Image 1: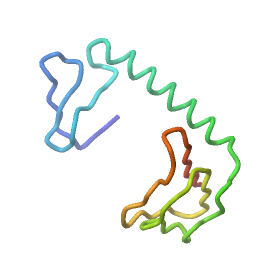
Image 2: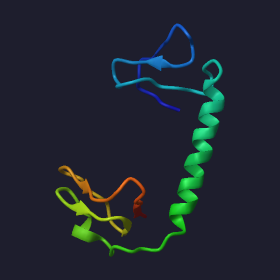
Image 3: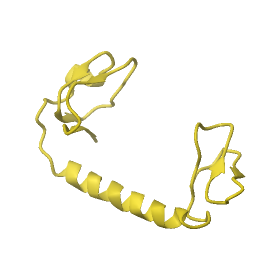
Image 4: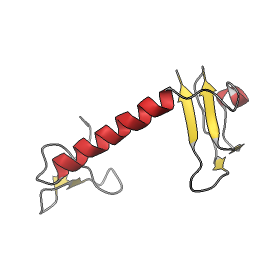
Length: 105
């Protein structure tokens, strides 16, 4: 549930817009097909989370003490027991089929 935003429903009532966000916002109360699309998105998110949570670290722990701005990251699993701070651009160096996972507690 999102609060603090001023939403205006699109004429289709399938989504809303706000001057406070770029793009559109969707909710389960929007007209079809939005609720079923959101259900699929949440299921996909749960699948990705469960998959990622079972992967072992491959790239070291707490790289940069959690300050990863300016770094170039290779494919793999990065694990952090501290906050992750991205104060400048980071670069993911890999191909379209590579996986990058940032795990934090």
